[in-house]
Length: 120
Image: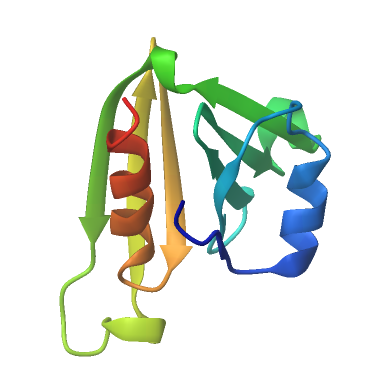
């Protein structure tokens, strides 16, 4: 099994409380900007901490891989937006819902995309 990818230890500790017995966490990726704080990817689902969910309340939200119908990875191009200064977006469609996650770093969305698509 590959090594777990963790951007922030505090986020890892928070998301571990929401894992079910026997569930393996693959990655915890820090988000950019307001709205969503971080995205966790397990072998079964994505879990994200949404600060803007349900009218300014904070919530952990789960989307099982079985409900995901679309996944897209988008990165910013340009000389000043590569590497750490860059950002990237992951877009996930599940039923009628579309979720958009913006990451710090130009490669994070692609990494999340690969982890998710390999398990669909």
